[in-house]
Image 1 (tube, rainbow, N blue to C red):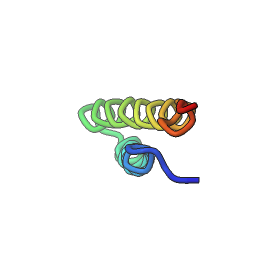
Image 2 (tube, one colour):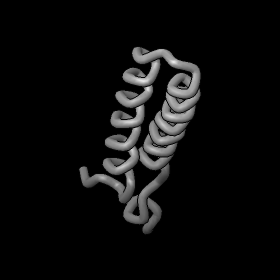
Image 3 (spheres, rainbow, N blue to C red):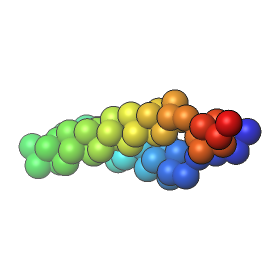
Image 4 (cartoon, rainbow, N blue to C red):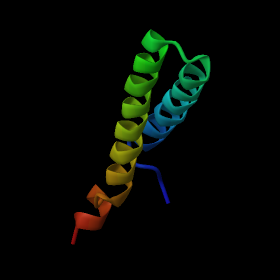
Length: 64
């Protein structure tokens, strides 16, 4: 099975954004918590995008 373009990129970005969000929530100041919420949102977006790319039919599957 070959990976579809963008799945690995979005998965890696999702993990990195999740790690940044965890670090931001650990620090705990008002501005850093706001940045953590933004990073958490970016992480959720990336994981959702990667899941959609995995589920989408590939060009090879659409050919007769």
